[in-house]
Length: 380
Image (cartoon, rainbow, N blue to C red; front, side):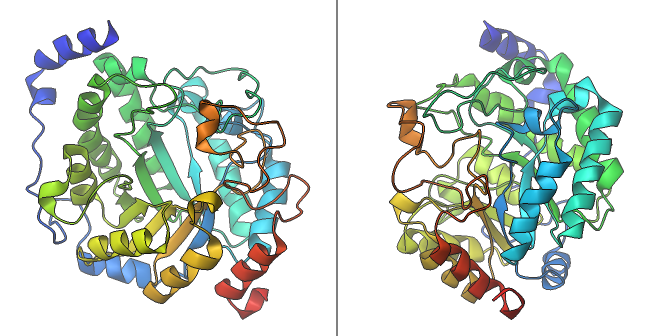
């Protein structure tokens, strides 16, 4: 029903139906309002080597629990980011949520400001994420359900959810959210960059199995989100990471990937593969002649490990953000296949993601020692 309503209304709105896509070639695009390759290169040259994690405090199971007033825990965030500082990490990728803003706009912005102050004390500049197409498609504000035992990211929620994505009347609310956040922090030196939409064409096959109409809805909205953010003239770059597929030529890109790569000021991507796969996909993206950051990697059983991937990235000066920092309520130390077969609460012997136990003890000391050896002599 939601999909039918969306399709009917979309067909009735010429402006939203006719999305003009810039013809994408495998060179950096020149889009009105976007950065030039020279500007992107100068920005990247001014950064340290960007190494960090996708950060969610261990006492939160999703972005709503992280950012709502009742469960925002500055003390826990400070404690965990201190561990990141000891590893020499310089960035974190952090997910926001449109419903947290809708519920309490002023309070939400205040909490983002508090988070940025904590991160700055630990010499960390976060990349902030507006929207996300992964996991539960029907987020709800308020107290979140408890984690499902033994299931990876069992309570992670999409932003916007499918009801908001389908309802064109809610797009004005989403526009207000994006513009308000960029207006507040778009010239803030504590913010590294803006990730406009995480895995926008992910249909969550194997977990929630989202409807196919979601792709058309995202394809319509994604360019607008870039435009909303740019209209506030941020001093930080915008991006959206490609994550699944063949990026070897323009002809192999799907429509959403074309938007992602043509609209992004810097190139970001995800890769959980072995060294050969990582190197191949990195080579494809390097042809764009823009700074490249891998904003998700590290799944030990799949062959994506710190020891194997970080040296390649450092040699290529590619920024790296692994998935998972402290094993907590999100349970991402448990593999993806737990959606088909839940694991015992303690998880597998070999963790999937994450670096620390909740008490700050490293899962593998050899890994934390290796990260320190890569990030510089200050932390050896």
